[in-house]
Length: 431
Image (tube, rainbow, N blue to C red; front, side, top):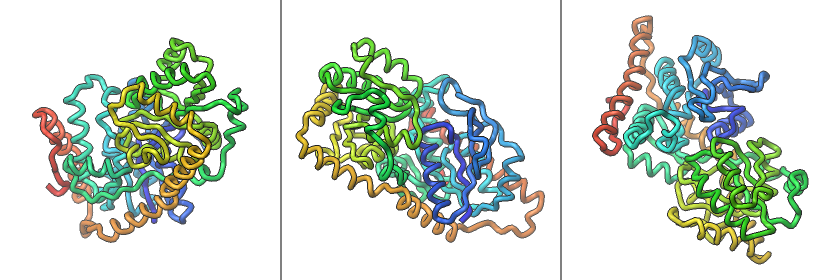
């Protein structure tokens, strides 16, 4: 199958969507399929990357780690024409997502959309953030989903949520899979030695973007209190973002700065080694759709302490592979959970590791990719493409206008629902 993946974020940016696109693309190609990635220009990208078309973008939009896609040029049309895709897969409802919708309409191809993110949790990057804007963004993503032929949800929590918001397009739960390297590679002891972490230190770790939507203030408070009470403990934080300086300040104020190691973003194989250097993984985000980093931690046998929220609740089983705490749990209770794992007897630790590894096997990337490919095939077989008879210049203009109408209808509908304060409503693509 010939698949076009269209995304607002991609390498060298390190984040959940970029890693998902990378993992699925590698798996699809390994399984014999052709993939073309359409992504924004990024600084320091690999000049020798294969199978990627870059489109112009404004870097670090409004202080975030993201790029703002500019109007797509004819270069993309030429690349798509040469590739001859059979299916378009959009990874965002906005910006390049609109381009994906128009492209699918122009080429009479089925469009699949992965609802990766709780988009309303990211409106603080936009001037004028407000509850009104959050409702607008949530509703617009639902309109977009209803303009597609199929939707992938990374977890059952997200599938249920978007159904409640009025998405009637068929939905399949297909999480981002874990790469094979997490099960077979990495050197935790070596990374500990390189970072100056004692072999017998208890390492509480975290991997992810250091940004407000990840509940970093709460997590930082919990980590500093835990370190203050456990003299043999070290925090290993992997990732970058706008909250990095705040986390360092919390460490200084708590008097534990020498035991908070912040590596910045890491990629393979160092990322796998970082996970293997940890004894427990701490996670406080409530804005996840899957919690890929939780599954990755479990894949190397590291138990997790997390708040009960979408993404985490599908992966963490309280009392088996870690602790899943009530979403409104206070910081002290989170610290108590970390302490419980730090003080657990060796037999309990071995059992937790076994449960962690068993959980992770369900998320192996080739399993997830196989499920996605089966959906692609079904969607393509059932897609009722419009007749191309007499498809000249007039028909081409009408097709483009039809695509623009779907986008504009979604914008208008979402704005209206937000203004009246209503729940997202259902507007199917055929309306």
